[in-house]
Image 1 (tube, one colour):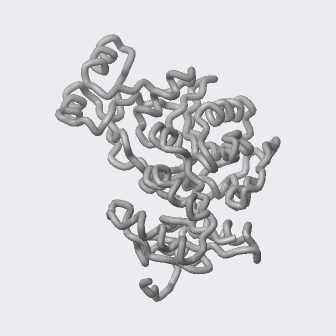
Image 2 (image 1 turned 60 degrees about the vertical axis):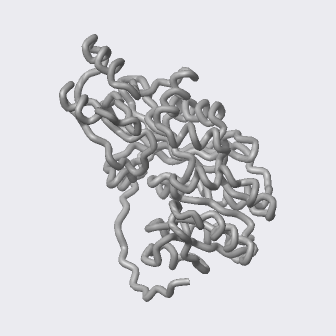
Length: 322
C-alpha cells in the first residue's frame, strides 16, 4: 500500500497518523509546493509539486503517482479538491484511488452560497445569506437581519478575508461592484466542529463532535469533546443527504436549543487531532477505502469533556529540493 498526502503544510500529525495506520504494510508519501513545509519530513518520502494554480499541477501529480506506484491520494487543501474531483477518472484509469467527493459535492461545499442553498433546501438551519445587496437591505430594514453582519468570500478558505460590518454605509461600500462575496448573518453562540466520515457507499460511519475554545487562522487550536446525541444525528442526516466521500469537517453554532450549520468542508479539519485521540482513526479508514475494503458504520461512543490544546514544535532540517 502506497499513499500520497498532498498539501501537507504544517500538519505533520496527520502524516504520522497515516504512518501509524499503515504500519509496516506500506509507505506514506507527502507532497507540498514548498520545501519549507515541515510535515514533508514526517513522511517516508516526499515530493515537491507545483502550486495548485500552476497549469502543470495535475500532470506533475499524475507523473509522481505513476512513477512511484501510488495506490491512493488524499489532499488537505481546499483549492486542490475541485481539480482532483474533476480528474478523478484519470487517476482511476491508472489504478489510483483518490479520496475526494464528486464535483457536485465539492462545488456545494466550496461555494459557500451553494452551501447555504443546500442546507436551506434540505431543511437544515443555517445563517441568512445573500449574494446581492438589495434583499439584504430589505431584511435589515425589516429588522430580520441585524448588525454586525459578515461580508465574506463565496469561495474562501481558512477564514480569510472575512469582515464584520456595522452599518448600511459600510456594507454598501464593501459590496459595491463585487460578485465574489456574500452577506451573511453573524450568529452568536457556542461554536462546534464535527469530524465525520462516509464510506464508499456514502454512508456515515463515524461522527465526533467538539466545542471550539480557540481558533487561529480558521483552524481549531483548542477544543473540548462533546457527546451530544442530537448534534450527532443532525450531522448524520447532513452526511447522508450530501453524500461526501471520506472525511469531512462540519462547523456549526448552538443558539439556544437550535443548531445553526455554518460550513461543510469535505476534507480533514483542523480540529481532527481531538477526534483521533478519542478513537476516530480516519487515516485507517482512508487506507481501507484505498484498499477497496468495506468500512462499516458503527456506534461511536466516545469520552465527553476531553480537552485538546495544540502547541507548535520546531523542526530543524536542511531540505533538498526534488
